[in-house]
Picture 1 (cartoon, helix red, strand yellow):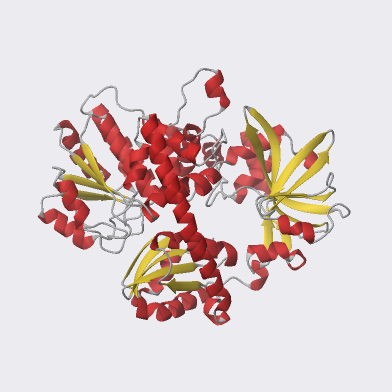
Picture 2 (cartoon, helix red, strand yellow; picture 1 turned 120 degrees about the vertical axis):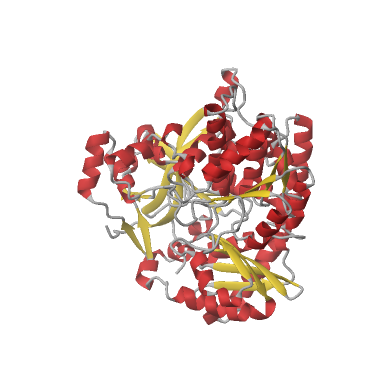
Length: 599
C-alpha cells in the first residue's frame, strides 16, 4: 500500500507514535537544556551522544571534517597548487545535472577568483550521454589544460582515463557516485566512497566534494605559498546548497551545514534592504528566481527542489547545460536576465515533454500485468524525450511508491533513469541485475543504466525478483508513523523555533510529523490551486487563529464533513515568512475523523 492509499484509506492504516528511549531523551534534555520534544526528535534521528547532539544543533564551519582525510586529496592538491603558482590553465569537466553544473561553477569561479585561467566542459546529454568522454578531454586539452578535474563524474571511466593519460593529461577525478572494485588509472581519485578512504562522512554530493577540494587548495595556498586575500569560501555555499538538495543526498552531517548556510545566501529577506546591506545573491541567481516568479524572501529546500533545480536541469534536458554555468557566473544584470529568460523557455518545453511522458507512463502502469509491477516498475518507450526520463521516474515513484526504471529506446539501445524509495538501495538492486545491462552507475537513491532493448524484459524480471527479497510486510506498509502527539495550545513561536533547529530538512533528516486532535475547524474548508487540489483549514487556539494548508489533500473535503465532525490531523510545522513578518503555519499531511490511534 503506497502513502496516498494510506491517507485515502485511513481506516485501514495505523497512526503510530514512534518510540524513543526515555532515558536518552532525559539525558539530552538535562545536559543540553533543551525542550523534551526536541530531545526526542534527536533520539529518533539516532543522535544520542550529547556532544554529537550539540554539534548537530550548532554546527559551524570549524566543525567540518579535514578535507585531507579524503583519500587522493593530498596528491591532487599538491599538483593543482603547483599549476596555480605556475599560472598553468586548469580544465573542469562536469556533468549536466544541477549537481554537476553547481560543481563546475564552483571550481571555475574559485580558480577565476585566484586569477587562474580555467576552462570548463559539460557533455551533451543527447550526443554523448552521462559520464566522461574523450571529446571533452581533447577540447580542454586543446586549450592548454594539461590538468583536468572532473566533478560529479568519472569514477567508472576506465578507458577514457587511460586515453587521457596517453595524450599527456593529468586527470583528477572527483565523484560521489559508487565506484566499481577497480578505480580508473589516473593522476588521482577523490571520492569518500572509494575503499580505504578514512573520510568520516560518505554522503557528500558532487559539489560537496568540489567544495572540499577548494577548501584544501585554499589552505595550502595560505600555509605554503603565503598567499593573502584568498576568496572567502563561505560565499560558494549557495552553489553547494543547490547541488546538495537537488541530488537528494542525505541532509545530515556536513551537508546540513552546507545547505543551511547556502540557503541564507540564496535568500533575500527584507532586512537586507532595510539595513542597507548588500544583497548576497549572485546576479544569475536573482535573474533565475525572477524568471521563475519565486517571490519568497526566504528560500527553502522545497524552493530548490520544485522551482530552481528543474530550471537549471532543463538546460541539460532540452537545451545546453553550459548556459546554466554561464548564468551562474554572470556579473551583468542585462545578460543574466536574457539568459534566465532563455532557460525559462527551455523549462517550459521540458514541462511539455515531461507531461506527455508522465501521462503515457501512468497509462503503461495501469495496463501492465499486475505481477510485472508488483515490486518494482520498469517502463520503456521510443516516444519519450530522453531529457525527462528522470523526472518521469520520480513521478512514478511518487504515485506508486515502488523503485522505478524509465528507459528511452533509440537505435535498439535503451538509456534509463532509476529512482528508489526510502529503505531500498537501488544501486545494490542494479548490481543483482547487471547480467542484463551494458553498464550502470549511481548511488542508493538514484542511478542510470544502459541496456540493449532486447534485454529489457529480462531486466524487468531480474529487477522485480531482486526487490521481492526486500519487500516489507503488509502490516509494516500500512503504518503511518508520527513523531509525537501535541496539543495545538503547545504550538507557539518558541516551540516552532526549537523544532526548526533541526532544519534544513531533506533526505535522512525529514520534517518532524506531529498529530493533534480532536479538533474543530473555523468556518469551512477552502480549496485552492489551479485544480482546487490543495486544502486550507483554520483552527482556533485560545485567542489565536492558526492557519494550515494540505498540499494535494483537496480530495479529503469530499471524504467527510469537516465542519460537523471532530477531526485529527498529522502535520509538520513552521513559519510562513513574508516581508519581514512571520506567522505559524501547519503543513497538513493527513486528516481523518477523530479516533484513537496506536502509541
